[in-house]
Image (cartoon, rainbow, N blue to C red; front, side, top):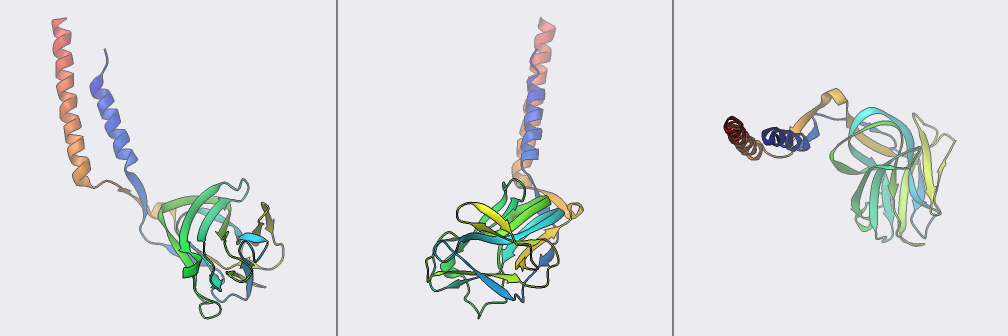
Length: 224
């Protein structure tokens, strides 16, 4: 005999679990390079690099926001992408478009500012990663500057990615001018993506239908 009521209950559980998302209660920040000491060019025609960033270890944290010191030179256009990749496999963990390069601040007037993106929801990261900015537009006169810190390395290593497809970790004292905000796993609460006024009627209807089907099956069993 098929227990339809059990199937309905199982579907309800799946629905509820599928609507739960992690939400940060409060965030700590980690930033390097707000007083950066060096800049490197980024862009398809201005440099050999399309990605510049930092290789570092993020120790089991829910990351809520990432950023980098980046500015425009001239009038570049194209997406500014902020991302986090697995350092071993280069698989994307976080990828988000900040906006168009034409909207960036300029050097040196905005040299002390991070360009940041808030993630749609906290992403749990635990391990060796690369946090970087990517820009594939530009030309010889319209490109981007990316900041780094020289002689003050605290963690990780400055890293860049060539247009022909290879990461290169710089083994000197530099580190990228990066930023991320995070919360510990125990400080993350689970919230429903769907409001209670939507979930509650679904639960009630499922329960009533389950009881009805159960009674029908019971009566049929007695008749048989």
